[in-house]
View (cartoon, helix red, strand yellow):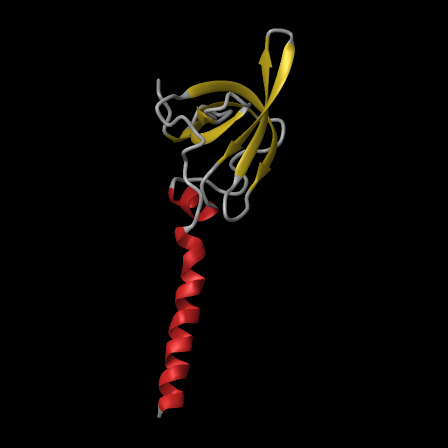
Length: 126
């Protein structure tokens, strides 16, 4: 009986350790969630993957092109917002709304998008 009790405690501890990574997920502290930047951009890559999808875009600034990497939420959450794995394709010209990185690097957290056909997903401010 004591062995069964010890085995039960071990199983409970193992199950709890599996839940720890979910609570240790990174925060959004690296993004300035109080600011929204609108990027007129060309999609160069869209990755529909777990734990986060992401979009890489080229943004013309003056005579230069900046490359931005935008982190998104999980594909499951994006589906609930209306996304599919083919919502954007390489070469699409989009208007992307992002919360920029606090350190000024060319990246951010996805907020919303205006697609080439004019439809929107996420939070898009007019």
